[in-house]
Length: 523
Image 1: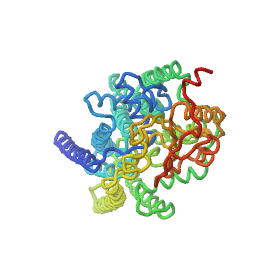
Image 2: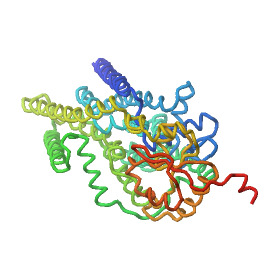
Image 3: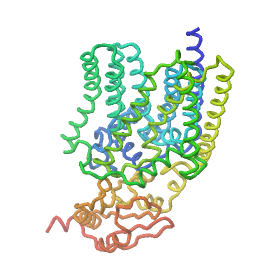
Image 4: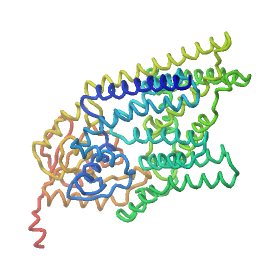
């Protein structure tokens, strides 16, 4: 009977995973969505393939070591590139493959929490329809790989807590280490695993603490090596400064909006969406708790999996708040950053299912209500996801979108072929035109929200390069989110620029006075 259930579960999850993976690839005819982070990952992967190491330069003549982001995702993109596929194209297929794998693993984790094939299938379906999960898997970002490592670590930890074996502990530590190498927030998995091993101890306190220490050491070793490499080649561990800048009320409110939008993306505002979400969760949790307290369905419950989910959610939120408060004020509380919390939330929902027994008339009715609520949630999520996927299918996403592919200013830069290009959109220029591109110096450090002391010197260096290297400055008017850069008016005035060409979406400039390299060398 158990083998039959396992086969049924494997078939159901395999079908859902394959459908999700191929479906996601099919709705991305223009490739994975591209953003600034995507450009960093793709540049690092291309540079690694070219033998220049993990560097983030958009100019092959220069080397800026990758330190702000961890190495796993660009390294995997480079691995895909060994087959001859450019990392831009590889990101699409990697995202689809990870989407399929994450659907299967989420369903598996939900089954371990509930011992219900139905609950596991619903968890997989909700994962497939969830706006935050679809969002990150359609982009060339590290989050899909991080989520895969996250769920893998939780699966191995659950296995270890049921039957403590060294090889399972090592596998869990390896998955946690890979998650940390995918995103620095993966340190939360090290905390989760160590706490879980001590909390659900099978042996003496001493042995449990020893096992937790072994898990932590194995999980931390690869990251320690990476941070040492960063310090040796870049003079910094993560390119961040320790400084206190607590999250603002607006950013926290944005986080609540983002989470509400996961479940009811078509509602549009925090109040109604969050109210419906809370009513849904509280009603379901109350019913599950009530019948579990009466001893109904409790024989199916495995508290280790849902306690792992709770530990992971708490650890991740704590790490996120600490990161925003002390290391990077620019981290937003949005669906991308909070997305890794979605799979454990599904696990907690599945874990409540045994509290709704089918052995009584009331229990069967409650199960029907639970299925109806899950169906409403699925349809609500699917409505928002379908809309965004349809737009991505027609236009493309981010810098892979039509607005950037057909950008008049980008076309002008390609036609001129002049390099280097200094711009407020170096990521877009690099991805769309392939020209060497450099960022305009920032007036404010986005990671600390403080004035950038190096701005005057870097602006002067930019002026010299424009004069001596026959470079151009391209200012895209559609870039509105880089608030920390100087305005177009300030640049033209302080750099003494003249207009080369005006386009519908921006302007190209060159230095009004040009000096030849030979003249400079002769002085």
